[in-house]
Length: 325
Image (cartoon, rainbow, N blue to C red):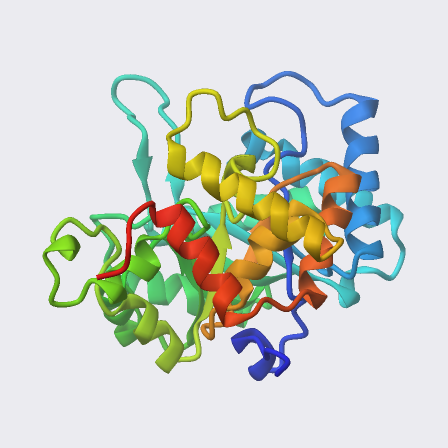
């Protein structure tokens, strides 16, 4: 059965994979952009589009805003492309600006509105398809966030909204104040970070007492047709070529199984890892963070790669490193 993403059910033509643009723009510093940075952005965009990826994920903090700047330049070079892609960005994280202004999260209306203006300027576009709030702000006032969202919709600057790294309770609290639906939640989900699966498996089990994934969040998002996006879906290359000398046995075993399945299916290890995520009935949408054109192609192979139930469990059990209860 072909999976239909929650975003697609809402009429948003999202691709199965999202290209995360955090790797664009050079370093996380104030050094100026170079010709190579702009070239990389254009080549990365072309590789994504050639692989069927038409949704792009940003954040105002990525390489201190430079990722959005080089992407915006590449977008301008592709005449007529804007209406054919989905642009998503995030705001809410503020880095330290001295002892009186520490690293913090900021969901104030003023910061959200000013952040979006900066994002649009750097991306050289009039609107965002989706704006996400990046990390939960303990000082969040839901009504203030809702007011900012309404201003952005009225001004035509943002079409849809979502969150990142939030649990079900936090989303419910915010949604109660918002007149616009929250349609995305972006979380770290991958074959190495399986608490989102373990939490459900360990119900009524002592093994679940230390689970960090908030109970009921996965089910809530499925019930509310909220798109679950996975950041870090490749686990930083842990099973697709990263050095394993210092890794525990279960990680090595999982990497070996990924390689074995990739060879059996004549595909890439990246495709196996992503297909494992996308096998889940929640219709997880991976946000791949590579800017390597060849790796983008390797990831794209996952979209048409079926895994059996048994193969899915083999990978899950290998990564758990312990039997099911």
